[in-house]
Structure formats: structure tokens, C-alpha cells
Length: 482
Image (cartoon, rainbow, N blue to C red; front, side, top):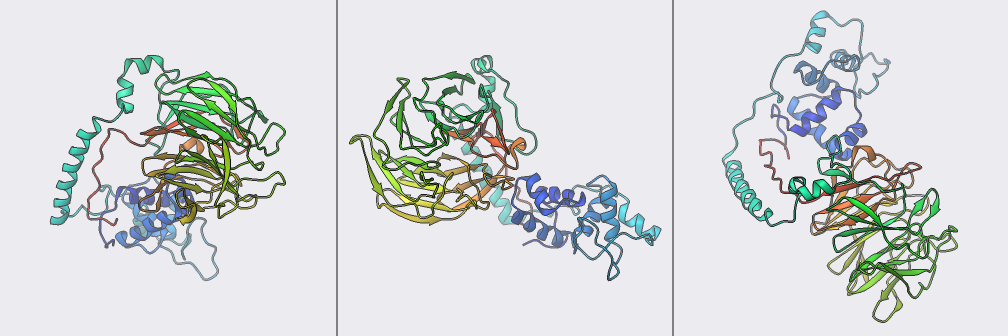
């Protein structure tokens, strides 16, 4: 728990600066890629440490200590911190307390409120670490040193690839980081043409992008991306053009059941793409037409859940396809009827998250146990999302974007399967807000996010998010609030 006069953490100082500029909790959350609840928790700690009872007092302390430049708006907020508001006076915009600027402020108070005082970034010097924390620091240092040795065995990280002449010479576009706090997002070669509602898959280290909506038309294009050379090339087109494509991979074969056909109707069509042979094959159709369904592969079978029926109603039906027997069987229905959700499989379980029923988007997370044919609930996301992307790396699921119903999406989320908890992570600055129906493909240490749409505009950019790198970071072990 925070204590008065305790030093601010770096994150708390960032929040203080934004408060001093008049930012609301929602604006702070979007700027720092954190939830509004996290902003509130930081503010609670800040009020205690600075012994301030309002945002205006926090802004005043920030200006007095020189943490922010004085602007007209910030000066009004600071002045408001030192003047009592008459019972019926208006409230200054952005200041949620009982103060307002006044022409009656004395020169002495104005000087106290606005004169910058050069001090260190924290209002008080850090206190010496407690003995227990010094011991923890030594242990953490040893663990990181061991981790550095282990990381030498990992596949090439970004730094190594940048130093690899073959990678640099083959790159179609330079590798650049997104601005802001998106330190693990990097751009890759864009698509030949912008598109959304495609599906992406990984086979033998290559990424395959199939189908989607191009200039409002369903397409059957198959595009192949090689991460090492950063180049896109054409594959054999899918025989049936499809949007809202969804599928899964088994033994280097990509299976794509159902979806929305060129006429805009749900379909029972089922086709498979042999990535190594670059060849499509028609398979037995689904028992019922579906669109916007989720698809995942587990235990040698392809599973399909949810979506919309031909009559536009939302579906909960579940089906499994056995490639060896070439037939479909019914499985336990999805508990929550929805479309445009996302699914991923891990250790015999299929996780289905988000989605929409046409009126609302969902935070819902539900898990299907393949062995028992049974559904259970998992912890919901913090933000409702439809038309989201989903990556799976190790025991974590990474949710990207969403916003079918124009829901504002300021950050992505990671699901820790073992701990059953969601944690926010950054979104590229150019995609904060709405990033719907992106295609996502996972590799062992990174995932790619391709295309999608912002508002009504289809996008052609490609991004990679590096989950595992060879960088190590020491934790902040100051005597500060967690």
C-alpha cells in the first residue's frame, strides 16, 4: 500500500503529467495503453503519495516541481486548486473537485501555484531498499543472467535479424518501430492490396493469407508471406471466393469450412489447401450453412462453432470433422450464441472469446474440453470485442483489436491460461480505437497481424509483435506501491 511522501513510480509520473494537462481517465488509458481501472488505481496511489485530495492539487504539484510545461489550460487547473468555489459557481472543464479560477487570487497564491521549482523527477528521494528487497534484487539478477544464457538458444530475435545480411538485403521495406509505447510492434511488407475479413495461417514457417473482402467483393486469393525475406507472393487461389474466412491447420493442410460467399450468404462449402503442394481440394460440406463462425484444430480434428445461419439468426451449433473418416459429427454446442468471435486451441482445449450478437459485443471467454465434450467459462476480457484477432503462443492467448459495433479499443489483451487472467498490452498507435477483422498468424516467438479495417476503411499494412526477445529488463524494486 502507498504511503505519504513515498516516491512516485515512472508510470505514476506519466499519469501525473497527463492529469496536469487536463486529460480524463479515458484519455489517460488510451495514451498509456492501460485500462481505466488501472488509471484509477494509479490515481489512488498518487493522491496518497503527494498528499493531494484532488486532480487540481496533483496538477499544481506537477507544475511547481517542473514536471510539465505551463500551458493556459494547465494554469487554470492549478489556479483552481487554491481557490474555494462559491456554492453555485461553474466547474472548470476537466477538474472534478470544488474549485474554480477567480480574479481574486492573490499574487502570493499565484506564485505558489505556478512557479516551477527544479527538483528530481520524484518529489522525495528514494528510500534505501529494505533487506528483503535487496535479497530479492540479487535473486532476480541471478535469474536474469541464467535467462540470458538460455535465450542464446532461441530462434533469431529482431536484433540478430537486423544484423543478418541476408535478412536486410531481402527486406522489401525497412523494419521500423511504431511510435509511442508500442515497443514490440514492428511494420512488415504491406499487402499488394488492402483487405479485411481474411484468414491467416502458419505452415512450415510461412504465413498464408486466404480470402477476405477486397473493394467490397469476396475474393479467393491465396497470398504467401515469407518472414525471413519480408516478401509476399501468390499461391493458388481458393476455388470459392469467401469473406469472413476462418480455418485451422492439421499436418500442413489448411481447412476452411463455411463463411460468406460472393453473394453475401452463409455457405456449407468446405475446402482444404495443401500448403506444400499448393493445391486446393473440395471436402464434404458442413451439415448447415454458417458465416462468422470460429474454427480450431485439436486432437486430429477440425472444430466449428457458432456464427450465423442462413436465416440470419445466431448459432450455437458445434461440429467436428475427422479427416481420416471424411465426415462431420455433432459436438457440444457453444454456450453463448455469437458471430465474429475468435478461437484458439491449447493442450486439448479450445478457447472462444469475444464476438457479437448483432446488437452487443461480448467480453465472454468459454473453453471447450475436447476429451469430455464439455464447455466451461473462463475469465472474461476487460473490453467487449467483436471482429477481433487471436494469437496463441505458449500458454498465452493474445487478443488483437475488435470494434465491430464501433466500440473504442484503446489496448490489446493477453490471457494467461494457467492463471486465468487477462492483462493489457499495447496496440500500434495507428490502430488505437477500432481495428476490426484483422487476420492473425502465430509463430513460436511472434505473431503477425495483417490487414483488417479501421472504421469503414480496409487496410493493407502488416505488423509483427515480438512476444519473446533477447532483451532483459530489471524490475523496479523501489519502495513503491505495486
